[in-house]
Image (tube, rainbow, N blue to C red; front, side):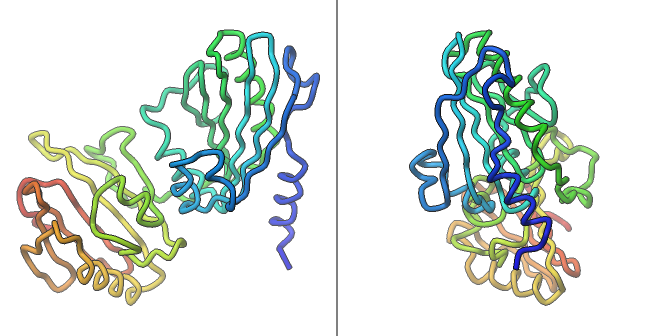
Length: 280
């Protein structure tokens, strides 16, 4: 039987906290669509894999007629707040908060994206008119105000803050998201099994070189050791091991850049994009 919080969340979402007619001046709901895991490809062809990997559960779309053209609200429910954050970080581009929008957001007059708990919400102002943009913000605020807020775990707490590149943070839960960052190989190399989130961020190494730092934490040291072994066994053919060590190894990619992987107890730390072999 589902726990009470899960039941309440399901009931809340099924009740569709979309603004109804009269809630936002100048808007009238005209259509409602629902997409599950089985048919998400029909709505976001080419981008569904990333959502599914991060724990997509359901998408509800509500369309509104306004004097400035149609505005649509897309509400993605993810299995966890971390999954919603992973999608937001992957999709945000340069984070540009929109005036008047409540909560963490980014966008422009055509589209605004908001992150709240396990929900990833978007308002689409298809014609880009100013009046439509104002109504899109009002609709989005009304929607997100009705959603429960579940803060994600701070998966970057162990990352150094010094010299971190602003807005470079990313999460990965499997090969689709990881390939966007670096090609370590194919499949579930780090044995995350859709459950263990990895985090990554870019750093500036004097005199100005940028490298990427990755971190994955496991329930125990054996899990981290097995993932390290699996990575080495299935390393991409373009990566060449250049140095062995008891807790990891160094490698070089096809462009001549160096990287490393190191086990520190229950954690795997990795680096990519360095000009010289890392000392670690």
